[in-house]
Image 1 (cartoon, rainbow, N blue to C red):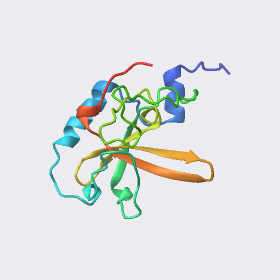
Image 2 (image 1 turned 30 degrees about the vertical axis):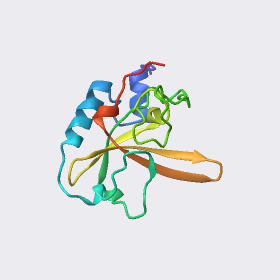
Image 3 (image 1 turned 45 degrees about the horizontal axis):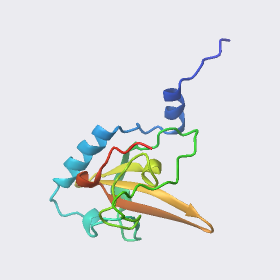
Image 4 (image 1 turned 135 degrees about the vertical axis):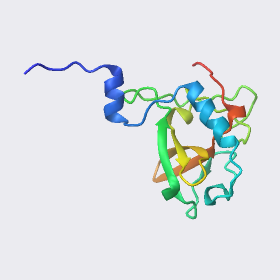
Length: 145
């Protein structure tokens, strides 16, 4: 039996069945999300900065549509991108897909109103914390490492 050689794209698909979103796709989803004005249970909080997902948040309404993870076989950097002195918890912190925590994120869409969110799981010490942030097109930057 002939052995198949898998490409990096094949490996990514096996590990993460979600498509890897490029910056243009991310910006497009963010603009689409920013135009949603429908009231929805997912928008009871603004999620302008990273927050723990509240117990009351309707996670069942979310569907993952893509990932920002570059390579599932390499540990992404923990370096953050804050050229203007923002911090992780800042509402105006840039969304830089190659930097932490965005390089570990999935992009999720609310199936009710079509807002989009960034999500990842913070795992440290003795806890696991699912985090969420609204996808804001004005904050997305294509910063290289």
